[in-house]
Structure formats: structure tokens, C-alpha cells
Image (cartoon, one colour):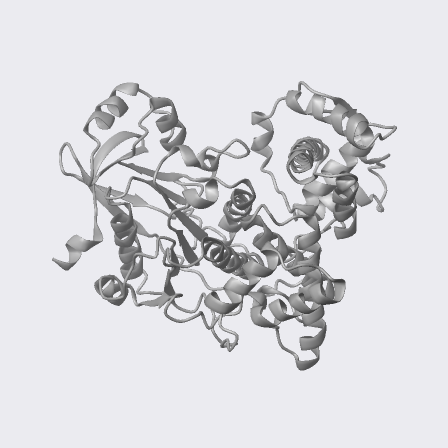
Length: 527
């Protein structure tokens, strides 16, 4: 029988949660809760994640979840993991994934109990909220293993190779091009561009989007979240015309889009899971939202759906806000940060008179979010649109690379000022799930940040999911951090030379070996 060990740091966590917090008689109880909670949070691991974990902590038998009879067709726990990973796991895979989910669940439980459970019996309320939410046996939109289940969306994808020029080699001015969807070169198509203000990162991304748009005859659509909100339609005119992209300024007019349309109308179980996903995405933005407020939001959304289902439609954000206020009045609760957030996005971001036919994916969109908007409203609006896109694409067939390993691509999501989200644990968790799970659907995430250090967070190294990193001029040029971002070179000399000459308009890439390049900037194409 396989033995499962927690990480060394989680050895003390097991003892603390078992004895000090909950006074459980058996330390297997907290392990079972941790694994279940990890699944409930829709956490997924790659098997190679196991190699990066340590096994120096508390030891459990593989029967940590109860006695598992591998010859039984009714083994609920094996079924849960098989469905969660959408394939039949062998014994070794199951043991490794059990360990990874155990560690993750323990870390989240410990963190949340330390941060969000002030007051008498708060830890019990927290535990009950987990139990009440239940364990999601399936991702809210991923099809189960059974071949009898039909995938809801069969989406088209651009299947030819996409080759873009990043710029010129600074030494010899040779063109530096990459085939972004050639899996012989990149097993993930996600981009990360880091650079200070004025380094040229936004112009580089615009140039990349322009090239992709031209090569695909505008077939491949993108959405650009301009979190700085500095874009104006006049200054963007050339880019918008050449990429056939629509400019939307949220401050000038609310979006004719309803993020609640990501929630199923026809499948009750799926709807329940979608509502929880929506709730968690909104709550990820503001750490002030506790368990009670999350439950209040879930109740308000469900109540509105109970009414609008009779009309065969989704409720609007305004309707959910009004329902929440009514629920607070009935319960004699005071208005709080939750009602304030919903009021802001209901009043400013999402139009109550939404267009039911409006889709984020039908055309390329540039979403301008000016800094004059409330900070939380900007964050929430981005996350709710990301939630919609995640549900839309995750509920589709996986893309299949060709015999030449050219991966079909469906869509591109550009997140400007990504450091705003990466620094916040809850929001970073949402981005982690997005990066991990959506790449098999042919969706590329491009993140722009001011520095490179933001990509390696305590809980997750985002660089591990990004195979196309481009470092422009950044403030922190610490060689260890640089290597973590762009990858460790065979020799330090080329990297050291490139770092010495790095300035605005230049960048460092590490495909083969580090190179200093003069980056492409879109504004030059209009001159």
C-alpha cells in the first residue's frame, strides 16, 4: 500500500488544526476535510507538480479517505478523482494527486483560519460553510468521463501555424520570430511581458495582436483589459482599425453585457455550481468579504434566478443587487462592503438593459477601465468577465494538435497591469486556475506587469505556466529573479551582457539562449 506524506511545513499544520482548532480525536479527519476542500475549490494539479513537493511531514496510509477496494465498482473516492481529472487514474497517479490535494487543502485551511476567523466560534462557522457548500464531484462545466455525455460547445479554432516577429537581434539585427502554437517549441502558449512604464510593453503586445490578427484574417479574436484605462479611442484608432477591434469605455457607457449569463438556466446542479463560482470570483477581489457575506450573495443570486427562470431568462446585476438589499432588510442586516461592491458594478459597469445577444467572444474587444472608476469595481468587472470566459471555453471540446504538433487556437485574453491581481492571494488563485485549465481549450493568456518578481508568488509560481516570457526594462534586475522569470540559461555570460544593455525599447528573451532584442512597437507601423 502506498504511503502519503504531507510537506514538512504542513506537519505542524495537521497537529494545530486537529488539536488546537477543532479538537478532533483522529488526525485523519482534518486530512479528509483538506482533500475534500481542495476538490471543492476546483484545484487541479499536473503530475509533474509532485516532483516539486517534499515528503517530510505527517505520514498517512493511502486509505486516508477510508478503506478503498480497487476491485469495487462503487469506490466513491476513486470515482471522485477520476471525474475531477476527466480520466481513469492508475494507482501511482492517484497516490500522487492525493498528496498534492492534501497539502494544498491544509495550506488553504490554515491560511483562512488565521486570516478570516476572528471571534468566538468563528472557526466552527468557517468549517460549516465548507460542509454546506458540499464537494463538487465535477467541475461546473467539464464533461464527466462517460462517453455518453456530450460536450455542450464545439468551437472553431484557427489551426494553421501562427508565426510572429518579436523584434530584431540587437547584435546583428536579424529578425527574431517565434511559432507560438508550435508545440515542438512551446507546450504552453501563455505570454508574460514585464516592463516599467515607458519600456514599450503595451506597444509590443499591440504589435503581437496586430500580427496575429493579420495572419488569421481577423478570425482569431481577442479581449484586451486595459486596467490603467489610459486608452482613448482616438489614440487607438489605427490599432482598432487594423485589428477590427471594438473600443468600449466603461466610464462613458456601461457594458451591454450580463456576466450572470455564464450561469446555466437548464441544468440545476450546474447552475448551483456556476453560482458558487460567480460568488467566489467576486469575493476573491475583496478580502473583507467573509463567509457570511459570500453566503448572503449566493442566497440573493439563487432567489433572483428562482424568479427569472419562470421567464426563461437570466437576472441582471441590478436585479441581484436589489434582491440582496431586500434580503438584508428582511434579515435586519446593515449594508456592508458586499452591498457597496454590487452597487458600484450595477450602477457603473454592467447595464441593467443588457443585450442578451452580446457576447464577449464574437468580436475583438478593447475594454477601457479608467482609474477614475472605484478600484474594487474595476477589479470585479475584470474578474466577472474572466469568469464568463472561463465557463464559456471550459465547456467546450479540447483542441487537438496536428500530426506536426501545431495547436489550434481559439481566443486570446490580454490582462494589463496583471501585478494588481498577482499580488492578491485570492485573485491570484483565480488566475492560476485560468492558466492551468484553459490552455487545453486553445485559449492564450497574455499578462503584462511592471516587474518580474510578481510572477513568483509564495503560493504559486506563475512562471511555471508561462512558456513565452519577455522581459523588457524592469527596475529589479536581480539575476536570480530574472532566471526564475525567463528560465535558467546554459551560460550566465549572455544574460549578464544583455542585462547591462537593457533599456527602453529593448527586451530579453531566452529561447535557446538569452538574447537582447530591439522589440517591435506597434506605433511604428503607422509611421
